Image 1 (cartoon, one colour):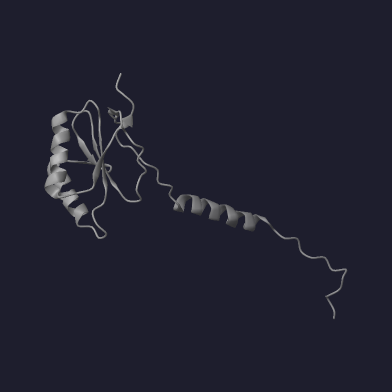
Image 2 (cartoon, helix red, strand yellow):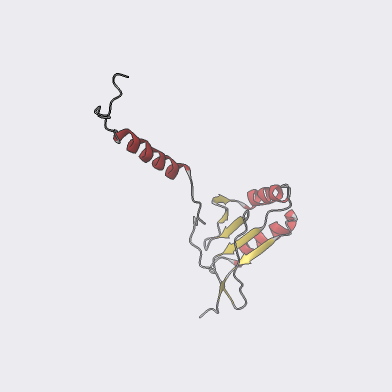
Length: 139
């Protein structure tokens, strides 16, 4: 068997293409996977409540935020009262029952806007909503 002797040297392995491939895969998976954190488009100072309980975030829920200037956010979108009513009506009709909603209101927000949002929830027939507060008493 010519050419298959022990004295023949093996060609060295070139690691550059292998490392390029591994680094490209790592880069791809870092970009392709998203780690979604609870994003806050608007900073809200929550009111204090003496009997607040810790709320664990449900896998799928809607967050409605009322800012100090009276604007309403549905998730990350600024909406009007009419748009909020439409979106809540759609959320009630989702398969698997209505999606839970968490209402966050700035402590300096006008009470009228807060009552308007709560009345929209009642009109839409959405049975599952809760208010977010922080524990402790106001100074």
